[in-house]
Image 1: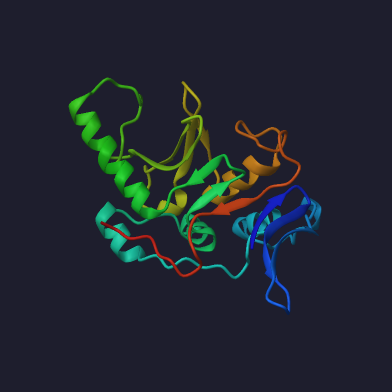
Image 2: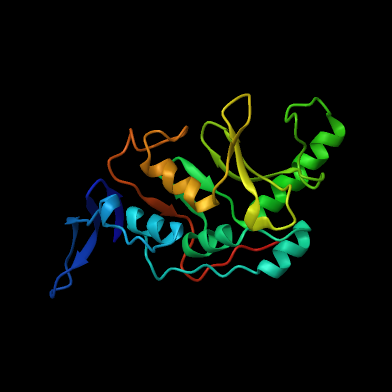
Length: 216
């Protein structure tokens, strides 16, 4: 069986075998509970709220070696992002926003650092890519190639702001990573909102529940 989330329903298709051994294709449609925003617990974390509004498996956990990732990157990462990465794993929100796993963050940081050394054209002014002091560290992307970064200007990564832009100039969001994503999905006033496009939201996972991203 394969299943997809669409609006307030789950749609699935596959093959079943009857008692006589005959197989036939089937299509199944099941109602999906979509909590209203005012139904979410007031003490829920932003990650918990994302799990609720996307219908994601609340028991899913990705295995990530954070010690190895942070040693390779040369900095700790926000605890809120770590929770988001572990709870969802590799995948995309609303077929639009892809939050990078640590190996993707590392690869992007290394690539852009080398690019800046070879092509110093000031395209990220007034900032520079990490590992420059207070540099930009990319953590997400969309099909429109918008920039979603952390501004690494504080020794405590939990105090990093989110910087984003569609073109120029940069805009600053002083909230956590998962709050930024939650508001993107649910707030029509968010600069990259999908709330005015979709009545329901989902997350497409690209990995099995026991798979772990590999650092190379």
